[in-house]
Length: 147
Image (cartoon, rainbow, N blue to C red):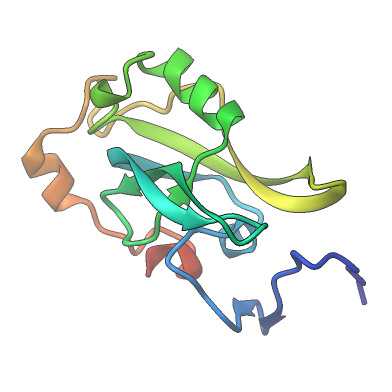
């Protein structure tokens, strides 16, 4: 049995989060890469670890209702892949993967963006059209991500 003394540990039962949230968690990826289509990036008001309210960049996706709080590293990767102007990201696909990183002095699970762009549906790297977005099904996603 693996022990994790971190206060950031996500507790699961049979591989499912006991307290799922509206945000993606690395454990929900089940060790797999997940390619998603960006619906939009916006700044949402979140509560910091210190209990203060602050605005953070959050990605919304076509395939899932779950959102991703985006760190500076991931913003830079996406900006280099697509465009430095985030308003131009809508409809583009990115591949996310679970890994670990150092945060608040602890090694924790996190989600990162692959530095190579996946091909858009159909073979072009152009953003998806509205019809293509409507045709996307989430049954190919890991169960926790698809909700």
